[in-house]
Length: 351
Image (cartoon, rainbow, N blue to C red; front, side):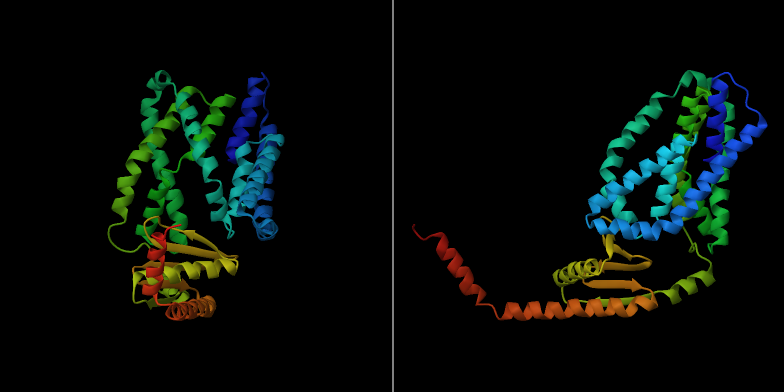
């Protein structure tokens, strides 16, 4: 992104017929790096306070709208500073991504995403000049190999340092191959500013197309075999997580308890996100607390850190007791058969 800001700045001056001294290039680079560093560090440090302030709106729709406005505001500041707008948007997303409301904001802005992204890809496709790509096909294939290597190595090495083994690092690198939205944005800005021509822009499109085709089967193949964590990290993760599991007599009872648990967690200020459309798996977040809730038929499982285990157990106990009260209330009801007979009789009474 910093290189993008430098290239765009140089392209603007060159397009105006001016000459860009090396000293000015250094100034542009320093400005880009300084703006990015200040906004990134400030955003990460202020994110908890910003989140606390956003939560005062109560409505998640309002929180999402204000967050989107902050992103646009920082993007405008980036543009005013002579940099690319993507820097401001990137900093906003990076700052809010570590908060407990990040997924809630993402869900509320999904409609904007669904509307704008197809338009974006359509525009990018219309900017491709296939005739201009004839002379750079060989360069394009070399660039694809270098891009693939760069992503796998660039993402895999930090993963190795973070506790993943070689298999896990390869999975992360392969998973990052098709992530090319920023590449398209950078290429589009470069083309519109004159920093690159339609031939190089076509190479960027070729790279993304190749990544989208090759990455899925390659990624699936990397998941065959052993775990992606180093053995000592797996032992550490096992020690850091406590599993609470209860089995209920029927699936409908488990459904009731799951819904009550979600309601209870939300009333305590947690934000719940369903992680799988086909299965009942939820991430529950509040500040830096993360709890996982899952239901598999009649079994409900909660995974929490040891310091939050007691809270999760107490909440589950409350919901089990509420189920008991609910069942006692059902037993004290009037005879269900008599109630059904009265309802049916009322259907045929003449007015």
